[in-house]
Image (cartoon, rainbow, N blue to C red; front, side, top):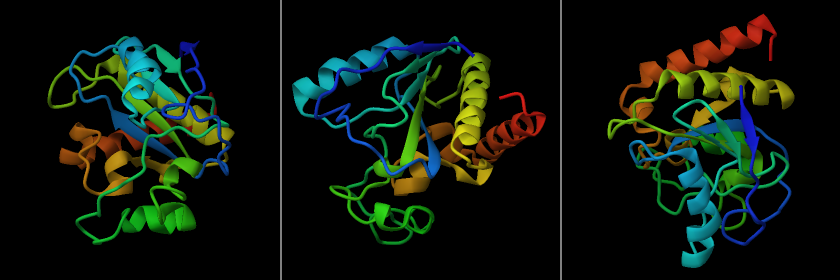
Length: 197
């Protein structure tokens, strides 16, 4: 696992420098643009978000070749899974899963969002369907297992952006093919059982 420490500059839009309450889940995303490289996602967080007043970031960005950019320290909040729209299934802001898992940290997108208690991982994709390279997936499995172990979490604490907000198809591939997300979690579980992370 090749982790590249490249922390964003502290700013109000992508790295607020605020302390979270501690990680209750690892949340996975897709970058949404085919063949976009991790450094370009990092640049967007670093430059475009502050320039355009757009709140967005993630703790980690996993590249097409498996390199992992560490953009926000784990002990700081990243803006990756707040919601301003209602979950279609529950009719509330955030899904039933998120409200059960995060409690009061899934009540208000402005003050008590799950950003305060989650670690976000962005995954680069090869096409509009959201497919990942083997290198991206392998690195994401290793990283997720490592973060679970470091934070005393289990595979039940792995989620997706869609699983938190309910309305966003992120990561698209796993939202449309949930069995592939189950496979990912199973790979993480097997790695944890080997105790090599």
